[in-house]
Length: 176
Image (cartoon, rainbow, N blue to C red):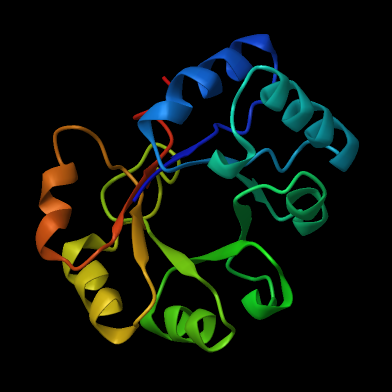
């Protein structure tokens, strides 16, 4: 699985064009635009659909009502959200940072998890990366797909192959 995550800088014309270009290259584009209102995000989704981006390629962050309304691929939730994947008719994922969080997500019926951050990341400049060993531990502990996140680029993505991860998600690899 390959997920492209938007930069959280809005859904202006340039960003919409970039999403359209990236969508065929990935399994999903996560619209991580937490600063946008539900109305503004809905407008962005409508624009993406009008541009021909399939709803089945889009995952919205933390707004399950939009995932349902537009029949998107799914909704991704922050690590502190208390949600149950079985409550929704679409793909549900959640961010995690430990084996304990991963197991909690599995028990709550999540379809997949993100585990981060693996490598040094410009998104988290003051936090040490968790590394490949921690990713391997999380993959071994849970039966749901684990998607690696954080500092992944074309030079290091091959290092994930031995961890058991089902794929990776990235921001700068797709949106820089």
